[in-house]
Length: 104
Image 1 (tube, one colour):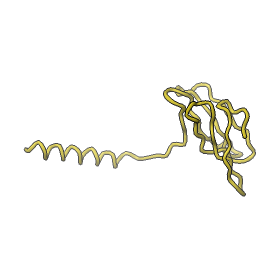
Image 2: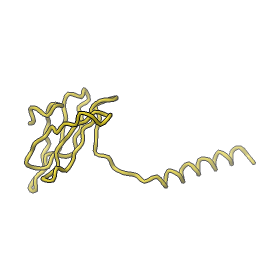
Image 3: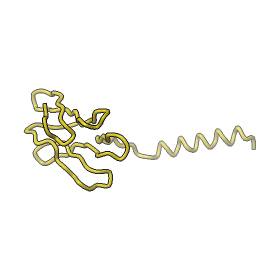
Image 4: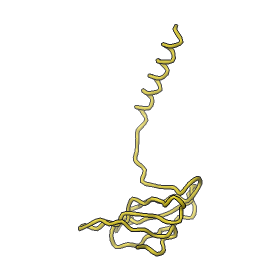
């Protein structure tokens, strides 16, 4: 069999396998290699922002807002987190230190 046909067959097989893998959307962000992971989670009274180490230890709730705290994203230097601050009426953007202090 021609090598070119074999290569094309392998590529088609690989693409077919990718179609079988379910895709999911992850709402977490990481400040660089092996840094803390920021994510949102529903507390039962709304979403709050949390951080955790990549190994799953040291979980911290870093927002305590009366509305939804969602879509966290780290600053390039890992010192700040920006997030969406949603209520039933409007959405705004807030920024805070990586430990959750000084939200503005």
